[in-house]
Amino acid sequence: MLYVDAGKGHYIPAKALADSFIRAGHEATVDNLLLVLGSKFWNIMTKYSWRAMLHVPRLEPLLTNSVDSRFNAYLMKRVVEMDKYKNVFSAWLEKERPDFIVSTNFIGGAVIPAVLDKLHLNIPVYQYLADVFDTPRIGVNNKLDMMYAPSDLGVSNAMKRGQSPEKVSVCPFPIQYKFESYNPKSKEAARKELGLENKFTILLSLGGEGIGSSALLYKLAEAGLDCQVVTIGGRSGSTDRNFARFRKRYPEFSLYQKGFVDNVPDYLSACDIQIGKAGANSVMESIFMKRPFIITQVLYPFEASLDFLRTYPIGWGENDTNCQVEIIKEYMESKTLRDTVETAFQNLPLSFGADKFREVLIKQIQKDAVK
Image (tube, rainbow, N blue to C red):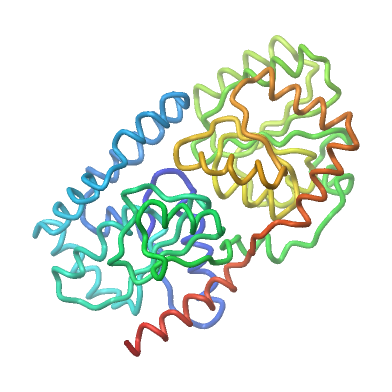
């Protein structure tokens, strides 16, 4: 399972799939694609350029769209065919001897078939669409053995971008095992266990980078809403300083900063609504736990999620902080809205399970082996 270190959105499904194969008695490994190719420079560039764009979320869609082209996919393929990268990758293949490769990042979908072709190796390569509802143009590649999307919308958008219908298929979302094996709790029980107050709870997800704004906290405090906010995710110095200033101004506001936690299902059980930038994993985990969400930063890879939400009203995409507060206020006060959301959750065309996805992959591997 190969991922790219640009947030946790590509690593988590790779790890969930690898863990599933291991539970079933197979061998599996999770590696950083760019390091496997021997490119420490591009690994650093990818990691920190993504973090930089999270600080300017309004510009990110424009910047990412400007480089998402078939021409850049072609350039990437030509680069990895250079001996410098090809030989390092060949050494990794010799060490691991994989029967197949799954890439959870679109870069892998673009470059891995090209370098394998240059090495004259016939190893099946499967691309997983970590963005769930869409794929960047760079990732479209009919040299792949199969592309998998965890939604019908993702399959449809991949075909619109040029992926052949016979080379793309729907799959279950590889939710982490701690979600699949979770014993559901009531909101009240989860809050008590976590040491939270028993009142309307907003779970603010800051993602793996911990980069977020404190603007919503000020608006909630100014509106006088009887709620509490719990933040989870990475810790960022700039975000921590912003939150410290908020605490100083509104010391009575119920704010809990938890940082990284390994019991995310408990926090989702405790919350009424989740809010944060559009990370596929946090959104899909929220859907799995049947908790509505507000996407505060609709980044380029997740723009198609808004099309999904127009059909299935289980969340909102809203960049404006004042509008976010109005959504929260309406959801707190309107039983009709809460009932609409609950009904929508019962009718979602989504499937979950890393083990289910594992079985899909095994059947495809067996099919490809007899070609």
